[in-house]
Length: 23
Image (cartoon, rainbow, N blue to C red; front, side, top):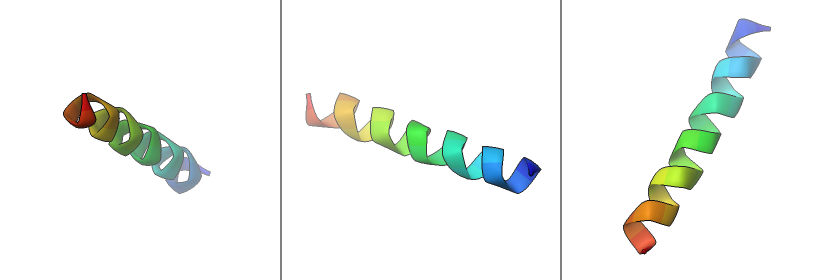
């Protein structure tokens, strides 16, 4: 379960990071 949450958090972090860098 913990790994699943970590995966979601990591993916969200990458998405935000990519969005910020693109802007």
